[in-house]
Image 1 (spheres, rainbow, N blue to C red):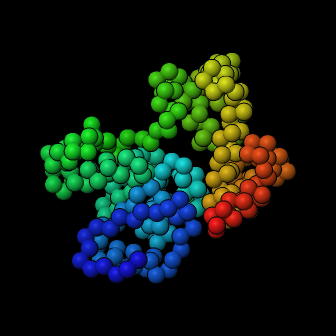
Image 2: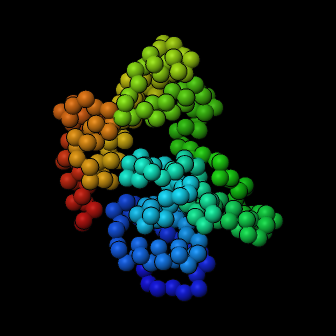
Image 3: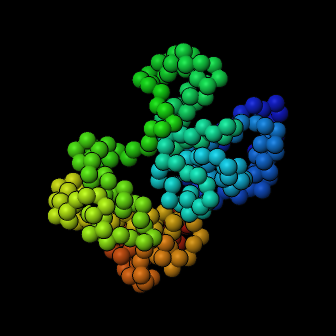
Amino acid sequence: MSKATDLETLVVCGPNTAQHFDDASTLKILRNLDRDKVNLGSVSSGSFVLARAGLLDNCRCTIHWENIPVFKEIYPHLNVAFTLYEIDQRRFTCSGGTAAIDMMLKLIENQYGRTLAQQISQQFQHDRIRTEIDSQQMADRIDLAMSAPKLIDVINLMESNIENPLALPNIAERCHLSLRQIERLFHKYRSMTPSQYYLSIRLSHAKQLLLNTNRSVIDISIATGFETQSYFTACYRKFFGSSPRSHRTQVATERKG
């Protein structure tokens, strides 16, 4: 990052590998800008850079939903939201994609008024400025929210209990459903059993940790609720087609190339 003067605002855009970013000179520049009261924000993976610089410690923040498991694992002390964007004093972060438009329009609205923000939104064929409280929605969740909201409750509960997986009867009780009802919902909308889906969530979480952190395989197996490393390895190989170590080595080689 080259030196810049008279800045009011700086937006950090990061690549998919931003979780590994650790350039001391750039991080120092960002901290100096913060001391100069510059507004600092990020788009998608840029949140990793601000977090590495210690600039998200006392504010709400967000990042793309795919990165949230790793982001929380690396920075467990941060207040990470599943929202499209967060604006907290001199910090602003977003989940990327079209959420960046919503965030910038909101910043414009805050400084120059809603009329100007709406006029700019219309120029971009943006039908409405989504708010900070709008949640990130994966495409496959939108239909479920309309057709099977009870299944959304079950999935959310599974995703909130990765390290210590809940027993299905416990999930059923918390969601006020019977085991039979849960099984029918998963069969109809996911074509698999509840246990298979829960396992897929845990393995997907494990994959994110494996490919984007330096944690050991045994630590990752524990963090995703597997009793033994051997069982974790067997499940991972069956699900992804290669062992955790082989997958990590393969991806690391591809990234270097």
